Length: 104
Image (spheres, one colour):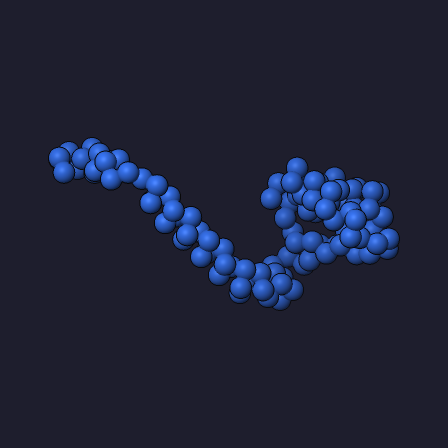
């Protein structure tokens, strides 16, 4: 996530779900703990921004470490398989021919 996406998320999606005097807990991602982010949260949303302690993800967000990490790995594998399936056999043969200086 980058600053632009985070700001869109805060203003467009999260704003209607936050009540005044709420505390927004965020990870230590640079865009989430920036001065700009804090200004949006405090001035526009009327709540407080609080980051989780550094290196505390496994304690504060156990699903992020366990289930979410596993889901991300599976998604990466699926994307890799899909990318490989998009190659034509001719393209793969050509790459091997160039790399091995041979002709398959």
